[in-house]
Length: 427
Image 1: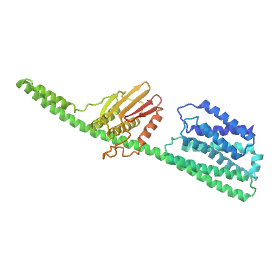
Image 2: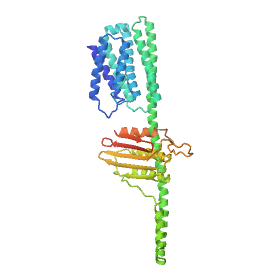
Image 3: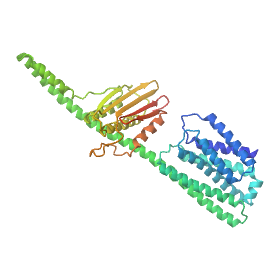
Image 4: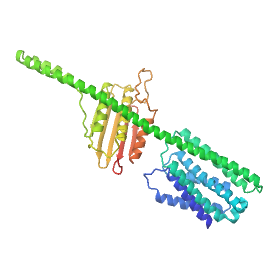
């Protein structure tokens, strides 16, 4: 009966660890309960039929990895969750067994046979304390590290866990106290390596997260500074055009009085010049206006046909830095794709509008996956971003607002659709 209780406790611990890697937007409550029951039953059966600890550990590990495929989790997170689960369990068993065996002055084998219930309860309690500590310090933040570091962490933690398991079960058959103490020191060394690996791994992850925030702020500040310069330049151009218009009106009036029909040709030539007057975009939202006017001017300079259909209320329930990051990153990517595209028909079509509690945003642009690298000029204004990093920023923002993102592309066109849920977010 006590074995069933321990199996349930361990299954609950595994689900707790797995929950830190799962999609938080999906409610898995009933599925979690079902898995806890199933894993507990399977573990109890293995114990009942007398499977050796090594065989039991291997079989249950395989079962746990298979179970993770029920959830929407990246592959390295599946492995990491299982390894972290066993790492916590073996730490608890090692610490409690060595402490109790020395306090009670008995061997570990006698401890497990005579005081199994007492040992198990303390060990499971300690395992939850270790989980609470790791969760509070490290697991509450999203993992955005490169896959190389993720799998390196899995290898280090796996080796530390396996070595501690082997040393622990080897000590059960050893009577000599000095040998047991040496094994204990080796276990402590492996434990130190494992804990150091966990600390460095999540420390590196925090560095990447902070770097992402700093990168986003730099992009925002740089683009905002550029917009101000473009706005001043636009105002200067408008002032000159309006000054010229006053002179043109006087000339038209004089021509209409002196020579019939001549003023009509003059008006036609004037219409062509009027096309160069910047047409301010007004969506109803000041921040969106700033970004779209800036990028509209930039696209026109590059000969890109930019069609905008956007409307938004003055105040949106979204952080300004998040909204500007989405717009700047997607528009920069679209302009870059158009400039590097070999087609003469370069275009960007943008739609943005609120729909209930959701903000709908879609951008479509001409696209050619095979860039012309023979061209000496390859447009790339993302000085601070590595390849794919801008998209990673957008994905994090979409996750923050429990939103949806869809990307489609072929050999001629690229489209990105984003839907943000603004109902529950507090700015």
